[in-house]
Image 1 (spheres, helix red, strand yellow):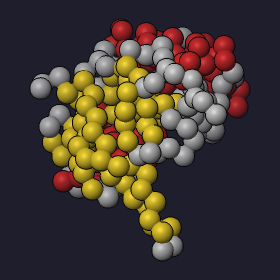
Image 2: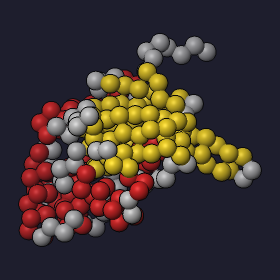
Image 3: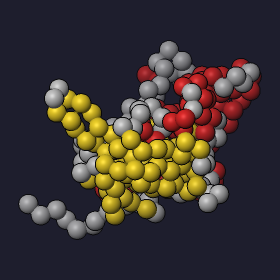
Image 4: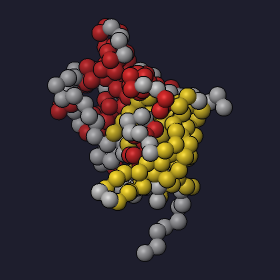
Length: 233
């Protein structure tokens, strides 16, 4: 299927805790298509971040495989994986991870500079992306001078500056108030519509997750259809 961007098969991750083994992921299968928006919900500690890290090549699964456009990323060298993350993927986290000593413009330009673009080209691309997320007037401000929502929009612009096919987002609104979180989700949906960027978003916020077209649940290490039935105590 030519429109498959990222997929995993039988993905398992087991951690060793002394003499005890902790299985966080249990034979997870997932297929992400071009332009698709998918939310994965789950309680804290359910393995959502572990799944994203394995899909993005930041963590090695205990078994199973991750495929990007049909190629198994675990067969690539560390340098190949790093180049792939820089060029084909974007990452957004709960905490923005912006470099405090650099301006918003410089932070967004970093992936371009790492990819070997000239400073002029990198700064122009960064300026264009800041304009897209509505922050042109904040380009010369450092992170400490920005609001929480502005910092997260800068982080999103940085994730998008190399025009990745897929963005992996780990609790992207978890550190924001409800109104700002709603604005960030609206921005992600606009990016998806305007740029065709696919999003895989993990969150514990079910109300916001249900705004996305497809919602799945990670429970006991396995992905399953999301249930809208209330929990019974």
